[in-house]
Length: 127
Length: 127
DNA sequence: TCTTGACCTGGAGTGCGCTCCAGGTTGTTC
DNA sequence: GAACAACCTGGAGCGCACTCCAGGTCAAGA
Image 1 (cartoon, rainbow over the protein chains, first blue to last red):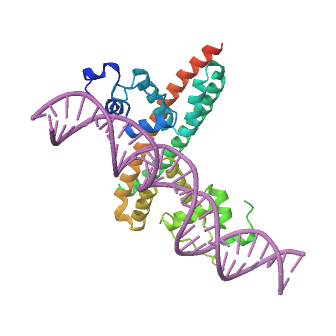
Image 2 (tube, protein in one colour; image 1 turned 30 degrees about the horizontal axis):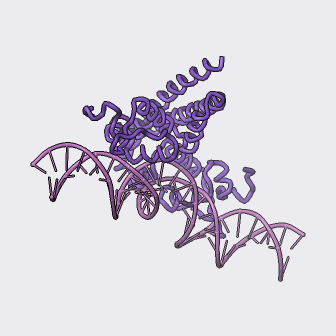
Image 3 (cartoon, rainbow over the protein chains, first blue to last red; image 1 turned 120 degrees about the vertical axis):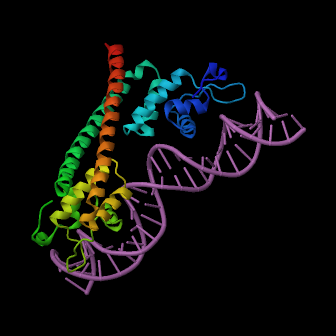
C-alpha cells in the first residue's frame, strides 16, 4: 500500500484493491456492470482510481455487504447519473434498504439468543 | 397449515414447509446433505416430520440465515451423532459462529450509519 | 535486447444453495 | 376405473457474484 510517485494521478488497481478490500477482478466487474463510472486511464491504458472512486467503492462494499444486489446497486447508480430529478427515488431506495438492514440485525439478535441458549446447555453439560 | 387427522404421527412435507418456512425441496435437500436425520415414513413412503424435526429445522434455518454454510452445519450434525464426546467441539463451533454473528451485526450497524448519513443529505436537498 | 511484472480485454469457469424436472407410486374422489 | 393430488427418486439446471484464463500491450530494469 506504499503510494509511489506514479500514483499522484490516482491509485493503481493493486493499490485500490488494497485500500478498499475489493479485488482487482471485482473492481473491473463492477465497472463493467455500471456500478463504477469508467475509470480514468494512465497513458498506457492502465486504470487510475481517484479518491472519489475510493469513497464510492467503500459505499458499494458497505451496501453489498448488507445484501444489496448488483441489480439494485446498478439501479441506484443509474439514478445518480440521471441527475437531481431522481433524488426522491434514490432516497426511497436507501430507506428501503435501511429497513432491510434493520431486519437483518433483528434476525441476528434472535440468532444470538438461540445460540446462547444452546451454549448454556453445553456449558452446563460440561461443568 | 390445517392439521388433519392423518398427521397424528407427524407432519406432511407440505405442513412442515408451511411451519418452518423451508420449502419441500430444501427439506429433502437438507436430508440428503445429512443436516436432518432420515425422516420417518408413513406406510406409503411419504415423510412424516416429528415435532423435534420442526424444532431442529428452525435451528437450521436460524443458523443458515446468519451465514453458516451447509458444510459447517453438516459438521455440526456429524458431531451431534457422534455423542457426548464431541460436545466441546460443538460448543466451539457455536462460539465461533456467535462471534461471526456479532461481527455481522457490527457491519450492519456501520452500514446504518452510512445510510443515515446519505439520507440526511437527500433530505436536506429536498427541504 | 531480453525479461519481468503490472496491467489490459473478452469471455469462460466456479461454488454455493437451492430449485426444478421426468417418470413413478399410492390413495382418494367422482 | 379414471382422474387427480400428494408425494417419491435421482439427477439436471439455475442465478448470483464473483474469479480465473488466454493472449496481448507496455515500461522499466539487467
